[in-house]
Length: 96
Length: 229
Image 1 (cartoon, chains in turn orange, cyan):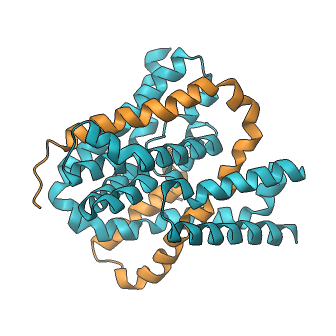
Image 2 (cartoon, each protein chain N blue to C red):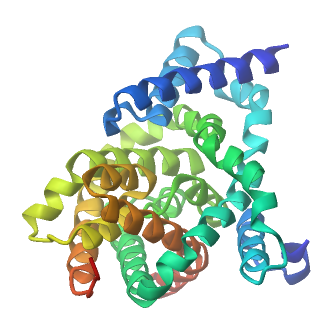
Image 3 (tube, rainbow over the protein chains, first blue to last red):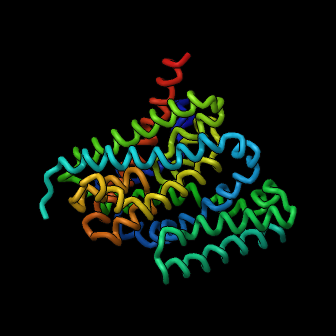
């Protein structure tokens, strides 16, 4: 509803996430009451995106066509991010 | 009837593969990865189209959105933990996400990927359910983005800790942050196994990245598109 009102293209579940987080943070909702439901949902969260994940089989030709691009992104991208974020995070002071 | 069968099969397969994963916790045995691979092979062999399967398994898909909302709970739980290093975590997540989107965009343009595939690759540095939502809103193909994110997670889970040691990143906290930002849930699991502190920082970094990505990736994508045209 918030999305419909503002007209901003922003995923509704994320708005829900942020609103719920703020409600918890300001003690408007009792976290203990929320715990059983949310823990159950999160435990099975990976299951819920399997049906969408299988959808790549509808795009096999496209994947084959762009296999160089895809392999490049799969390998180069995580290495660069790991290196940069790792180096940046290493500058932090941590208490052990 | 078909719907019950598809849901039951998917759920059963997930429960079995998760049991296997809990017995031998290796990133290569990631339950989602194995389930997606097995169901794909099953569909291709049996000749059932993906649309038929997706239609039949929609009840599972419906639970995705409430489950994303439920992520507010662990975020709330982590919040006291995140607070003292909030600025550093935010900076790391922001830099990681921006680099990921920027580099993916440049590679896509250089290799002539086309609009749809470029939109698909914009949110690879974030946990899968959030990737799905962002990719869909950008007009990409959520299923390919999801598969990419899971594979990146598996690669990071297998080689991430070793890679960071190679780059001379030694503190477990810093390793955790890097794994959480770049390799999401699977990287976080690997970080937890490496060191409890790495695990805690990885999961905090992952959740924070999810929030920042949701706001920032669509904006950055729009900016990049403007610059390019």
